[in-house]
Image 1 (cartoon, rainbow, N blue to C red):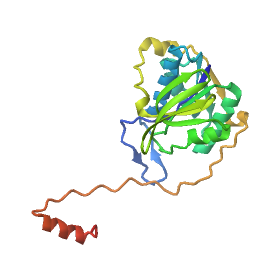
Image 2 (cartoon, one colour):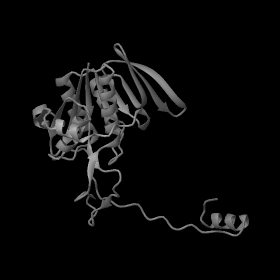
Image 3 (cartoon, rainbow, N blue to C red):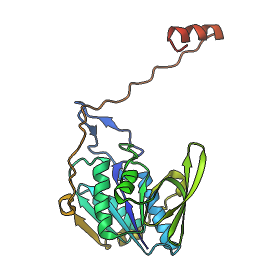
Image 4 (cartoon, helix red, strand yellow):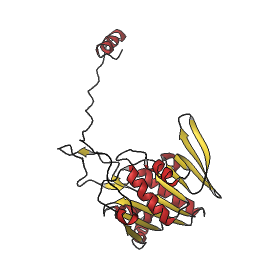
Length: 248
């Protein structure tokens, strides 16, 4: 069984993001970048499935500029067998990402497709769902537990009313939530070995996918700073202030 895992290069979650002075975009100059945390969980789950004998090959795929190679090498160091880099400098929207992943999946024919439930840069939470729709494949989103049983993937996922367990016929698209696992620490020997693993290059044009944006960002702005709180001497004073603020 082959697993295809999508990974994205994003601003590290420990970095405080700043907006450019002209409001045209987010400033990522000289900022630490890393693998999207949810994608890291997806890679870890694929590796665990391989260690359990459920998966025979793990293919990591990333879409973006040349520096995405670093993210793919991290996935290879974690345990992926090979990588595919769809190189493009275009700003990719979720639908374009889903179309590119479908094109890669059509070529690779994986039985399970693992993605993070969302990327921490745009927080779109759309790609996995769009990919499943394009592939006409079953989907399990926000997955906190995954088991492979023959030709089915049994997933436990979070819903508004609690937890839901469903069985999906393979091939299926699965998006990883934080509860799924805790990614392992990558050691130096694994990083060195990853440099020798194959990394294939491709482009959207070679895959026959149009990545032209459908939306235009007008401007970016940081959230307004929160005002300091104020202490009141009594409940009556609190009520008056809430009325003045038109909260009640």
